[in-house]
Length: 406
Image: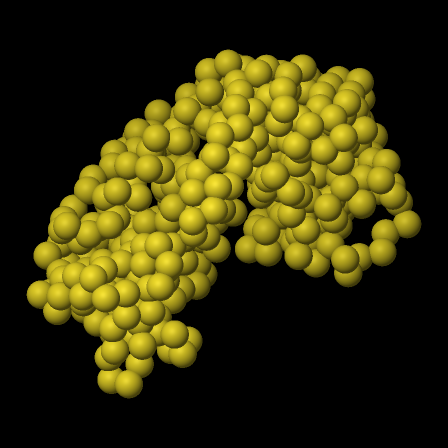
């Protein structure tokens, strides 16, 4: 196989950076070929044993790229959750796919700690891959790279000492308590990462695709409106011997979020469809079109199945070619898959995560596609529009990586 010209250039630069600093960060937007480029770097520097950590759904695609490249090194591909299961004797290069998933703060996640232990044990060269390096906050960079001995924040004992200098720490009230908010990381953080980072955009790669976002409003039933008003007033509602409890502001927001799209989860753990308006609207609006549908809550999938029927809706990518629609849960379907065969992407609901926003809306993008249409289905007067506006305000945390470092 042949690499694209820009991939060859990134492989050359990336090889130089990783050999000099022992790690490199490839901030390459979706569909620009991060996986192959990282494998090309491993091949170029003469690696013998490579460990590639990714999401479970992406393992097959990465193994296919490895076979296509047919390099001289051995490759182990495994999902982050199974890291504890492997016992390699040697790792020359560690590749961390979707590395933004390591960025929890102020304390490191279990995943970030596991990666740090692997680096400490094997002292490998490390290649970070992400199209959205800091989707929610620049503070997310610290724990992504803190396991690398040569990272630019190594002089700080922990995130809190790092935050003393690089985060505008504020406070917010949660359940009546004042809690420190460390999300306002300074842009200096990505400036410090510049010597280790190669950024590359879809536009630079020759993509001409434009994502057109459309917001469509749906009238939900009067019953749903009554439920939301009663729950907001009384903080508890009973339906058929089941209880909807919203005794904290967070739970109230979550229950309103569920109800706005026509489902609800009870205190017992059971869930229920209370309105099929959104599913019926989607079926009618996109009649005759092939669509990818993203849902958030599990019961929403049952609503879609009830309206579309099993012959017209699948949850398996391999079956999508024979169905009108594929339904994917936002978090599990936002990365590592291609919906290039879809005519449109339709969001039954919306997630609070900026990662979900950036990653999932790009599932149709290909180099040859000129336009991609993304439809957000919001209940009229519901909570989804507020969530959308909150997520949109986080755009700069991703876009600035490509503005400042390209």
